[in-house]
Image (cartoon, rainbow, N blue to C red; front, side):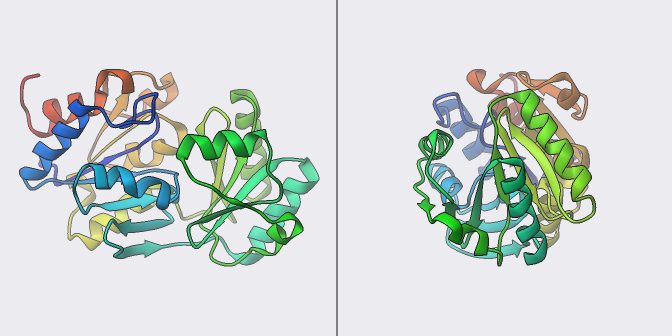
Length: 268
């Protein structure tokens, strides 16, 4: 196995519970890059909420954002864009309204919602991004939408919301849980796996030369498709079953462990 591209999730994986990259993870990624292995971030987050972490690594890495809907480097090079069809976006908005789901939408890497709520507050504080409350105008934002986010109150509600969306919009959109209260909705052909495929192709690499690491349901597609994959120790058992190995959690430098053990083949 020769790894040439290393893709890491952010929340619950590369970032600790304070939303920071640990010194050990940062050092491991820099050592890996010096060996010619390309690091990338693969996240459901917005590009703007992800770019600063690539900047902290002092690397102009291609970032897979919006669960694969936008791949863009720190310097602004766009590798791929993929959006939900406008008609489906409108139907998803209407369904959210009917079901009384709180949702957020994204256009041109900006965040929009109908009204500011406690859920909005928690989201914005978590990623250090400010969005726009635009009332009923939010229902008219249907073009160039990479994903729609529904915020719930529990794991159980998120599982049910994802199931309902996948049943109702089968073949038209795909829903995946990324955190206990986040359900992310993308085009059916968009996932972190498709993001890895697109990026590997652009870089002239085979998918067997890619390693992925993550912890959540929205990481499962890339964990399954990558040539080699590691799962964080904090992940649920069904996610762990999708990886080749299990490493420490985000509070114990699991990313660094994966890099040293399985990429650089060094003792730690």
